[in-house]
Image 1: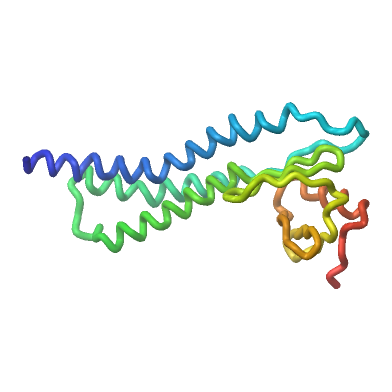
Image 2: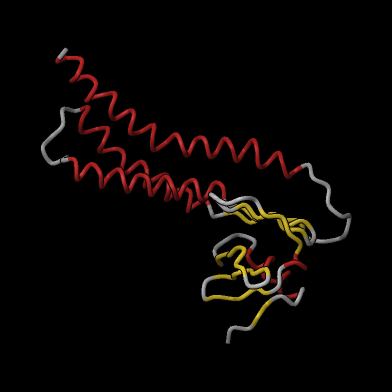
Length: 185
């Protein structure tokens, strides 16, 4: 029985922690690939000449999330499997778990965040929020901030886009041409 407890602590517990960290990333990537992408790609929009593009988080954001999750979950797997040591106290382990979940959250955020622009139609997918569909005409104002823009419908904040997002300039120009940009100076 003692051998079973030892094997459980040395192998099953670290594997369970790794699954808790990695399973949400895998499920998010699978869901994003199958459900959301298939749902919108076949849609028919007005046959006007216009821009069709997609805004996504840069790959380095996904990379930082994955590396963070790996870096902070690795000691939780390696230390018990190799025999453990006294420096991995429950408080230290909880710190590693918290930072590995932070990396997991960042990876899921990077996978799921997306804005699809087809002509003057926007499909906004923000993680942990419902998908928004709107036309550029429905957006009342767009305020420029120091590192991006914030779009409002009436006075309600709908979404924001940072400057480091690929396609930011196209969306900015489209809002400017539509007269939606509000001067903040």
